[in-house]
Image (cartoon, rainbow, N blue to C red; front, side, top):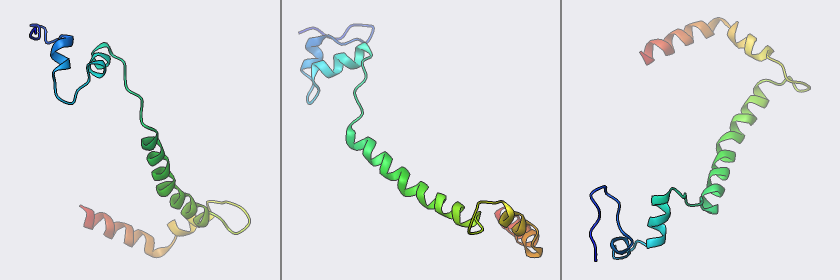
Length: 96
């Protein structure tokens, strides 16, 4: 059995004796070949994206529609309200 070289690269024999590590996987990592992403990880990412983005879309669709079409008029109405500036100032003050 040989020991790892001074440069830090391990030999196939040294890799093969490590518990729970397959020589082929270590060799693939060393040569730069990446492992594939598991299908379940992609599925979890997609379900999470839908879970978080769908309510944001529904809120925007409800907030910016007048019933027949989308408009920014509700936003301008909210900004023009008398209590908006007071509430905004108070929120900024408390967050400071």
